[in-house]
Length: 351
View: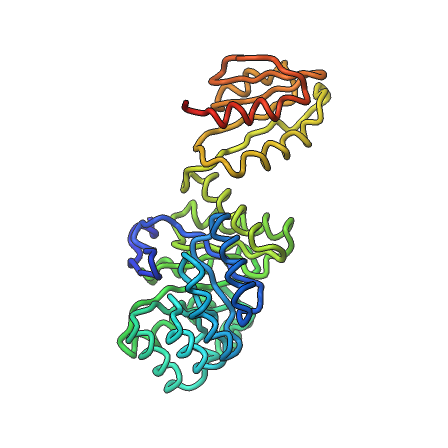
């Protein structure tokens, strides 16, 4: 598996690569210059399960804000730089744990050298980012259009540029909003490098389409052992990105912890508001740190049997429901008491 053999890189207080756990990343959508708002959002994301955070650094004020933001957060901070190499240097000086640059848009070789020297001085990793939307003309002309091969060649050319300055503390990120192309590009990249890879489907869209595209694309890559850090890119509250990333990892058996909800799809036998109940159970269990499976079933016909594989389950009937623990019915309660009865069981779990 590629993930087991990638180079180990230290980002702040976390290690990635070499078979270390895949870390979930997100990006703030606040103005980085606004220290309070940015730190508050990072704290919220950390609580949701974010493990690395990226902040846009479009101004010198934003670069300087990193120093104050870092005092208020507990996860590594990546500074996202475009075009101006001086912002990358300032971000490193103000405590960024990693910087994300596209050497292709940062200017001359001397500018790149200056950034690499500063990163070397502080020993912080550089994430080399290439996006299919900004693929250089030479690769477009060579292949006639944006292709997986072109994206990989572009990324490896940037890596070589930094290696020439005798620095290999690198993470590579290649992005495309085209899922098959993105998957193919990562598969090709994994064959030619052992640097850790940050994976994501870029500009994947709104909550609905973005979740599906990210789950499909990232699911394939992670299943194949590709990817050391990941981000689900969504147009919306970044907390949603974390929820989806955690679910992708859990569904592939790459992460444990937290309650897993299984629920039946409803049918003509359903005599309770199962959809409402399942959503209520999901919301209610979010704060429990238990590594168990909870089943929410819509009828007393199949419910008990289907809930057998879960640690605990509820099955609803007409106006009433069953609490099922380890496959055994432990009690019957009124429909409106099901949620509270389940909460009580969870609060006393293992006691």
